[in-house]
Image (tube, rainbow, N blue to C red):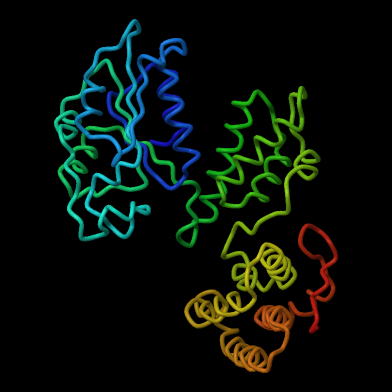
Length: 348
């Protein structure tokens, strides 16, 4: 379940007794916890909302709080954060306290938590928050079976089509968040907003909040507002340069190179990525250009070892990889990132 799906379920009145809130997006997890604790009336939260941190609190104390009947109201919400500490250490987990003993340390005693997850109080809500859990343990298996899992992972760009999927998810996230703030945003503004944040959900969330404050009482956010308030665009698609090269579109490839360099990508790293792509993927994308591409790679490697400006070497390689016909088109289409004239940097 996503945070958005949880919000929909809460509106329908569908609430589970145990939630596992998991993922790397800390702000997203905080919002999910806030949404669940808001199910308790504000005046009664001092009585009926309790928060604990694994490692600081005993699991049995958490269970006792979760078994306690609500005072005055109809529901109690108990939150236990950092439950990854209740599992034997794994390198994949978020950092664990130094005194936890590392990967070889035995798991802390979960106390009665396993029994509670198997048989929770139907009127109360137990919210367990973690970066990751060990699903091979008894507690992990119980959570997989009994708890409703809310995943807060941001936008994944894994896989060849990952960037397109992440872009679609980011657009939906931004549109929903703007709507929840009582604002509208036009299509051009939404596109510009997501292009600037890239796959960074933390930045996208912050940019939306900034825009809502900026427009004030206005009901709509426009593309002009986005360009005035939000910083420079980040590169969203790690495959954009190679996709443009495969299509023989040197002008687009150079624009994406410029974007990536402006946003901190290393030309040396990008040269290495292009080398990998030529050796492993170009034979499927553009088999007739493989021979010339390999020779261009050798020239680029020699130039970089001679201490030539790495961005100049990278730009020249990109143009050569696109093929001779497209090199002429690139000279006739010198548009840089964001529609600005493209001026390659020369050696200093």
